[in-house]
Amino acid sequence: MQHADQKYIDALINNDRGLIEELYQKYSGKIKWMVLQNNGTVTEAADIFQEALLSIYKKAVNQDFTLTCPLDAFLYVTCKNKWLSELNKRRSNKVTISSFSVYNVDKDSFKLAEEFKLEQERRDLLTEKLGELCEDCRQLLQLNWRGKPLKEVAGLLNITYGYARKKKCECMQKLIALVTHFSQFNSLKW
Amino acid sequence: MNEDSFERIDKYLNGEMSREEQLLFEAEITENGELASLVNMYRVIEKDMSENEKYYDGELALKKTLAEMNSRYFKDEGLFAGEREDAGILRSADASAIKNIKANKPAVVTKAGKINMAIRLAVAASVIGIIAVGVNWYTEKQYNLQVAVANKIKDSSKRANSEDTSLLNKNNPVNEVAKQDEKKIEIDTVEAYLGTLYAQNFKPDQAPDYTEGSVLEDGFDVYQHKRYAMAITAFDRADTTLVTRGEDGDQEHTIFYKHYYKALSYMALKNIKKAIPELDMATAHSPEPLLTIKSQWYLSLAYIKTNDLHKARELLKLIADNKESALFKTKAQKLMQKLPELN
Image 1 (tube, one colour):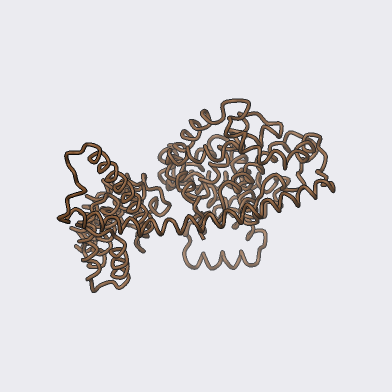
Image 2 (image 1 turned 90 degrees about the vertical axis):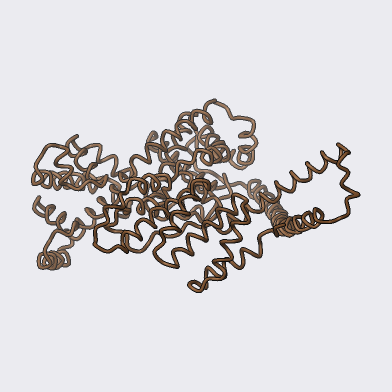
């Protein structure tokens, strides 16, 4: 059953400034506090909050994302996961928190946030590996993924259709190799 | 796996193989686990990255809004007063866990910690109980308010028609001000009530079943993803004169849908004033009785939201008398019963 906070998800989809401001008024304080209390700065807190909202946006525009739990708990766990991931990148020893006594997070919010985290990690890996491809590959693939047929992409890049098709396959081969050779590829349950 | 494999995978996933090639390739996938994994990865990456890139422009616009909000809400090193209050709820529960994060030690729950937890749980349970009672009281109050508003409007219309003018001393300025205040309170209450009725009954209609190839396809695509502002732009751009399948019916449907879904997009964005003329156009171009009823339904909701109860009632009466749709007949009858009486 849809939660009343679904309006904030719809606000992100529609770039509804009024409701987005309401979302910030209600929820940004807790996230700021969480990051500041955990060796972060205000700028980092802002980045984490923005990333979380953009992740939710991407999921919502592409799938029918129905929020079935309160947004504050879901957002808190999502931001916390992102911040932990950031902290772990900086430290050699893995940071853990043994309990979620921090926040009264219900099971639904926790489960949704964990599923969301996995999807996000896959997406982040793809984006990172795409960045490792050459400019030609990135351009060609991104134009195609933005809905332009390969014929049109070929026209835009001033190459023949046959070459564009061949190039796309080469680039996909490289991208798949980069992704599958990532050390934690198996944990992402592709 | 060589380049040729990737070309075949791309052709297969894009439906560019002949039926025979497709069957042969599928047989090969069944027998070759490595090929099967590759096809799956290729498919997943194409899907995920297309989803990522498809709404690139929308994402840019949202980033701009979020950046602006960030600069307002994340500007100090400390917390604002309101944030401290929120954060205080978390601070006491988190102190030991946070210390351990900084020291890179695992969190330890002590006996004192367990007792504190029990107390916190007991407090939380009683707070939840109080909230439940409060919600129940509030819900009942809202229902009573709706009944009171409906009665108030009936009473005030009776008073206006009554021959007893002893209470209406028009020469007394205090009474005049009191009457105006009372009228303003009544108007505010009625508006809130009608706003609630609107919110309870408005739900954007689904896009029609078959949209592929339609000149409105782009509009339907973003409409289904609730991108209503983009949907309006896409519907505006669509040239309905390009419908050339040779059937007048198709063009009629296209013109209807263009206005209808544009109106619903406006209503979803709470721009009722712009929705009304679009619904008028949709009704005027409706090719089927059921589509007429649907556009009348939304138009009645728009009139409720803009407090035009005469027009709302007229439309609801038409829908309640219709023989095409029992569903809308019932909806209209129920909604009419909830509308305040008119003078």
